[in-house]
Length: 87
Image (tube, rainbow, N blue to C red; front, side, top):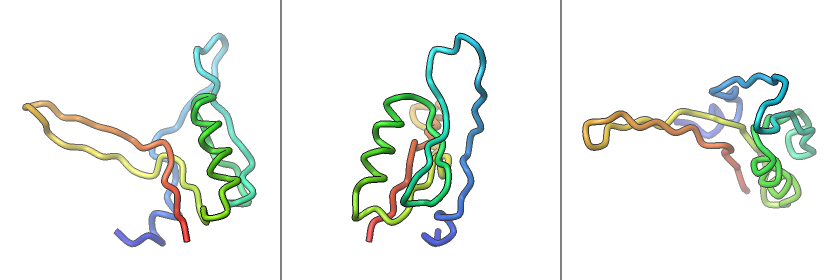
């Protein structure tokens, strides 16, 4: 897949806020992206902050794609938190 296509990808998952949820999702204004970037936990937010302040990171894409495979007769799925483009 072309990197330019991935840079414009929308998040694979959507998340909702609700009262008494166990995690803290939200949006962060990224200087790198000049736009909001979503996060689903404080751990993701801390990683996002590190990426945003790293001068080698040129683009940050949240939840860019779904990885899927069959392993031991079971379908396994994973959505990466972030895809970082460096340059």
